[in-house]
Length: 440
Picture 1 (tube, rainbow, N blue to C red):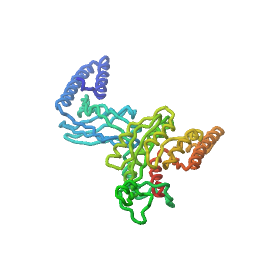
Picture 2: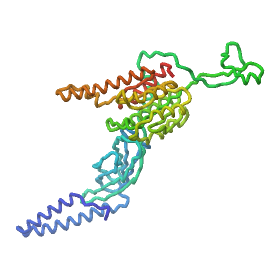
Picture 3: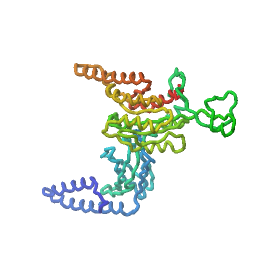
Picture 4: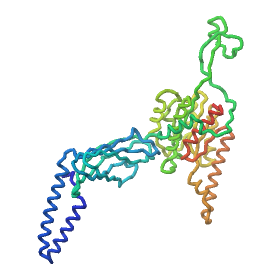
């Protein structure tokens, strides 16, 4: 039968019986003993198979998946087992885990008493967004005799999507509401410009700003009428993610794009909780995945759906096209956080004129990354000439990054220079700092 598998215990017994047969050449009495043992072994094997297949239901198993994977976080997979045999069984569980994890020897062993129900779990740590396909949940059950196993198959072909990290959203929310991110010494500064929302047209009274006179309404009413405005309560914050070749650089199994997407997800949650309007878009050769900045129900889900399957490519990002798209898409002054990466000052200089053009109309924050491996290399003591050269080169690259910060500051462009693993915390802190200073 296809569902029947012979266990190592049976082969060991047969090897033992074979040895007794060999001894029969020297001790004839051993032949009879070997015959008897062989017959008993066959009977035991048939009895074992009868016990395993006598109950049609036997065992029930179910793989319980979460609603979705949280990329970059530990996710728990639950499995429920229930024994319908009247005897204690041993279970070998082999789950066909998605190929992205490259786990080829996964198995769990358990003992179940009669009518016992047991739950177990194991953890997976996805480092890619997209779809994860689980295969079959295979169970090999053996009776106390242990000569054969019966195979059961459950939960065939389940699919789970991996979304940008959402596991820590609640933690970030609590910290943001308590302002635990913020550093001391923040000083509010004068806003550059203002944004007003139209409220109503009313009759002019002494003290009203004459610049708000509505001449069309005045001519109709034959008396001075003015437009009344109110300060816009929520600010527009756009998260723009570069998905060009520079964002493919991996750190701890995840690309810079993955870190940026996780940070964008966490920051969007905080922006909406703070009452501001969150929007996002991605770019390489052209602007894609556009989500207008809004503050309404379902906005976080729309952002999550847009982010979950974004991939990098080998193209050079087109900052000229980025500037044109930002100019055409974002009509009002907004806070724009640009997730990208510049490794050298020359690389920044090629794109600086476009960043300056964006910064003329918006408050621009350029988010780029420290190289964690270079940071470790710089901190290690040098023991030979080769290590000294390596350390000097690492310090040169780090110095270039600091020059990039200075160059951006020269033109009034804010920057955030952080390690990939700290990006979510750092970018939320930057947003709260900007908001506390009244810069938007």
